[in-house]
Length: 304
Image 1 (tube, rainbow, N blue to C red):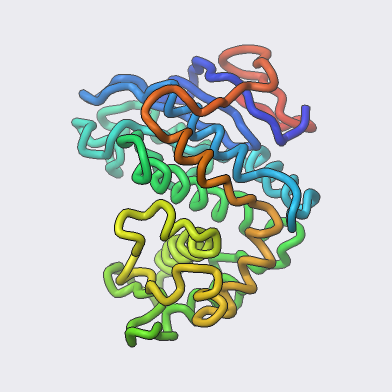
Image 2: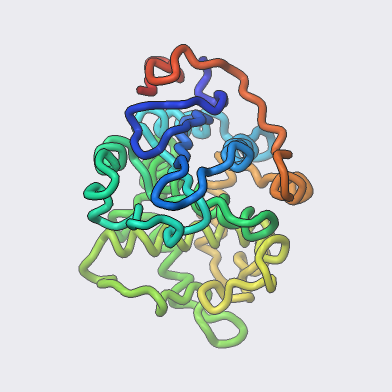
């Protein structure tokens, strides 16, 4: 079975507290049931996440199918998970995102430790907010577990050193001002030790890359309320032309990486898909062998 495929919503065990999974393009999308006082993630929202992954891994244009497949296969082989929860962390009591959550949800640490993950997608209200919620956190997951040093990128996306193209592009954006005299990428609101903490620098890099990609796609104007991410991302670089002018290293990084593996989902399709209702159009193209394990992905990558 090709890694570029999507399965049905499947009830799973062994991923507590997550109870449903959709495997799509190498990513295990795991959704929470009604737990901790929160509502269960809806099947319609799970399908919207899955469909977005399919749209982002499209074909044509500047896509390099060899590298794109390598990104998806890397995520499958490394048990990459995208966690999905309802509303926001405050919906869960006790907290489901705290470092001590395993005390209240025994088993959550095992799931987090055995499935590579970055952060949650939260089921939020329909519309632009939902589009940005899903896109941002999928890009985080793909950046960290799919594109980091994948074959074909030759260290361009390494988030753990200070020599990668990603680091250099981010630094140019942090130290270059837009037409208003403020930085293109203003990280002053973040708290951390930039010089001494590589994990903090990696956080800034993945946040930078998300904003770079949606600027290149023109999505700040299309889907961000107020058509601005300022002050974190300067309006001078909210379009591809602006990125070329104010963050040339970022524009080249986008062409060398994202443009080779990710397609920009159609704006009208995203608007329709994230309206209220079960309207993603997501259809599974294979059926699981079993609900709790042994789902073959491609060349031996196993879900279980």
